[in-house]
Image (cartoon, rainbow, N blue to C red):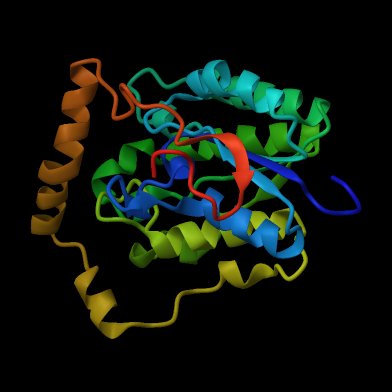
Length: 265
C-alpha cells in the first residue's frame, strides 16, 4: 500500500472468484472480485487488478497453481476464497482443506499483502437435498476463522446472516452467486478491509419482492428438476474424474487497470 492506497490487487480461488453466475463465457464474467476491484479503484484510482481463479479447483490446486504467480505479482491486497469444491467431495478432510487455505494466508501476509476471505453460507437452506454437507460447511468455517485470526486476515462473516441464503442471491444452480450475490460478497469484503465508504448494509435482507419470493418456493418437483439439471451433471463429471475447469486458465493473469479487459475479450 502506498499513501494509504492499494496499488496491486490479486484474487485467488475457484469459480466464485472467477465470477461464475455473474455474466457468462460469451459476454464475459464479472463476479465479486471484479466488483471488489471497482470498489478499491473508487478510493485507489491507480490500483491494478489480476484474477488467477479457475473454476473447479480444489484448495490444494489453488495453492499449487495460483500462490506462486500471485506472490510474483507482489500484491498489497489479495483475496483467497477456496474450499467449497473440497467439501463437495466424498473424502472431504476439513483439516487438510483448511491447511491449504492457511498456507496461502501465511505466504501472502508474510509477503506484506493485506488478505481478505469469507466464511461460507449454509447452502442447504436453499438446496435441502444437500443437507448432509451442512456439518462440513460448519467445520470448514470454524477452521477458516481460526486461520484468519492467526494471520491477521480480514474476515467477512457471511455465514451468520439470513440474507446470505436469500434465493435471489444465488444462481439457478444454487452453487454460485447471482449478480446480486456477487455484489453482496464484494461489499462484505470491502467492509472487512475497511475500505472508505463501506458499511454493513450487505448484511441486511434484500427488499421484499412478492413475485420473486413466490417463485423461489421450493417444491419436491423443483428439487427434482434442480437435481436433474445441475446436481446430476456435476456428479457425472466427478465419476468420470473431470472438472468444469479442465482446459481452462486464469482469465486475468496479469495486473491490469480496473475496467480494462484482459487480452482476447
